[in-house]
Amino acid sequence: MFEYPKLLVDTGVIRSNALKVTGLCAQKGVSLWGVTKGLSGRPEVAKAMLEGGCKGIADSRCANILRMKKAGVKGPFMLLRIPMLSELSFVAENIDVVLVSMTETVEALDALCRNAGKRSQVIVMVDMGDLREGIWPNEAERMGECLKKCEAVDFLGVGSNFGCLSGVLPTEKNLSALVDVGRELADAAGTDLAVVSGGATSSLYLLEEDRMPVGVNQLRVGEAILLGTDVTGKREIPYLNKNAVEIRAEVVECRRKPTKPIGEIGADAFGKVPVFEDRGERLRVIVAMGRQDVMPEGLRPLLKGASIIGASSDHLTIDVEDTGKSFRPGDILAFAPDYGAMLAAATSGYVNVRIL
Image 1 (cartoon, rainbow, N blue to C red):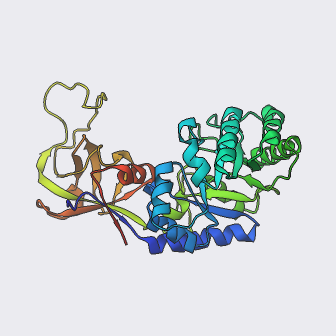
Image 2 (spheres, one colour; image 1 turned 90 degrees about the horizontal axis):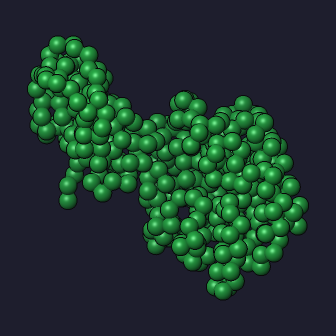
Image 3 (tube, rainbow, N blue to C red; image 1 turned 135 degrees about the horizontal axis):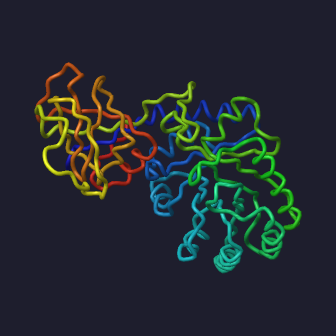
């Protein structure tokens, strides 16, 4: 019903990026799962990733996976977030590969799968230093013994997460250690080690430089395919397109104002005390988009010379003095989002998502 703010998603670019990343992975014997959570599991995005050669679709939300399945996306599907016990019934019925880190979860999943006449494959997450989910390496034997007792849960392999909580980067050292933990766990489980899932977009540079340790044979990639960037490595990936996702917002005010606020300064609506440089009067516009719609810190105006001043819940204020253009209400400004801004916009109920 309401056109703006708008999130534009070009599935042709996503398909092209997926083809390039899967091609790189294939040269090194690595399978690629496309991660759709950055765009809230849109079925069109999943289909583009699969058409681009991804082996399967990975998402962190059961609701997203359900939406994709109902839309005819064939999968297979991986649940990226370690599951809640309260959603295990859905997981047992609908998810092909599950990331796990607790023996209690494995035991509960095995019981549910047995009752439902299903089988589930699990990847055991190992904490290699980022301090998010995962067993410690010295817990491998205990987890392996738990898996050995399971009747309907199959041990597929091990995986690890990098960069998402503490910024720890994947390296030859910690990924080689992950392979070693996987072998130990497989021995304890009395089975083979089929998969070592060596991280996400941040691991691609090891493939590019031919430094990926032997044994790592899977990656779970979203950001590179969707945005062509690697935020953890602070780089734009040169062989990928950067224009798959764009955010547009409508101008509601345009006038010259001082750059330094007038009056006594306190905290803003979000508890922060802003600081402004006095640059005299400058032309600024307000667009009808704020923190309920997007993460403003992750936006880059596509109009040369424009810069973001700040944002409240519903308004984004932009300095346009140096653009050399005039503005009026109804004009549209476009922005390139980073991963966090894209994620927020795709999740917001106030943003119109248009798939191209």
